[in-house]
Image 1 (tube, rainbow, N blue to C red):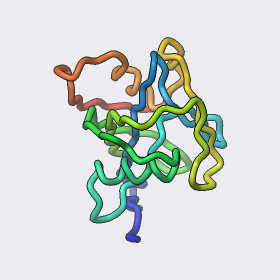
Image 2: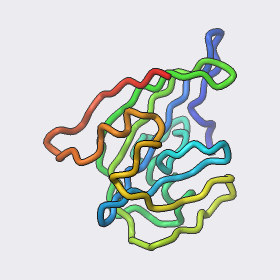
Image 3: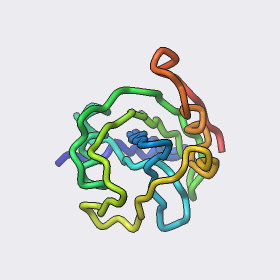
Image 4: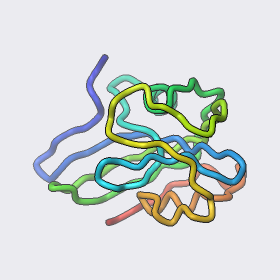
Length: 148
């Protein structure tokens, strides 16, 4: 497979990623990473891969389910520091998969998957993801900027 869309520049790193917003019965499927960060399932887009292809691949890799659909919701420009400055473009898709109360990831990536009540998603990162909660399709897609 081709390389991830992560580019090292003199000023920092540029990352191009995708994430899946998966809801079921008032809950959101999230990942908790090894460092304690809670976010959506997803990952880096590969060179030559569309963001929609990438979210489908990432959902299968991380959750073990093939998406039934993936509808574009938003792009978030995420500016943060993690040893070096990052300028990240995060493409978020509303994804439908077969519901299970628990999922076992297909790959070993030091993260856990679990459902969280939509009223308790305040810890979700990046924070701009919170603006997607409860939005109707006629309000989408959005362009959001997150600066940490």
